[in-house]
Image (cartoon, rainbow, N blue to C red):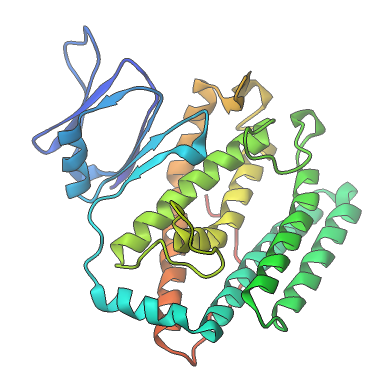
Length: 328
């Protein structure tokens, strides 16, 4: 069974020896090792070392490597391996992106699915927290209004405006689900100012890595998207696909705090913002490893929908499905 390897201990160095990944530590006589066939992804935080030859061997085996900067998750690096060699699919994608009608249809469906899932999560919050019914009900109504507006838009810019307004409405409700002591009042990215924002930034970074890996493996060009304009050093299509997974990540984070798997004691304050302690990171990645399996399946399913849409001008993505979030 494939597994995620997370390492944040600065004393370790990783080396690929034959068909195994070995974890070396100074003065340790027997270094533990893991068969490459059992590894799906390696996440390195801090300053633990991995030589370039081992990095190439991991990528050649289809094992993605995320070099995570705990201080600035958005500045992390992804090593995913070779681009998929599906030239016809990439050509098809480029042709599809020239057609604004096709782009509009895709972005409408993409945002529709995201907003429905976020609304569903807030509705679940209302059922569990009746005392918060009014602010959550207001946020759900605003999301419903934005959903209804999607169908009538005739430009990508207007859809982007709706996305921004819907995001603000969602976070107005989402922040109500967390204890006031956590200090989560709004979405703050750089630097994160509280535990919830810190884990949101980390979760979104990991989600983007999953989207990049999937798109590349399927032969797409991850730099050409629709909702997110192509820009220097931004994988716009991966950012588009990331929108579909945000609701999943947001629910996971609510789950971690409402079940008290993570508490305020698992975070520390630094000049570069709030971040997980080593104990907190271990707890987060334990649950992320389980959650990631359902996330990957969900993303792949929706990416194949994208393939069908890009190849058929008359097809649509059905965005009305409500998801059962209790899957991790």
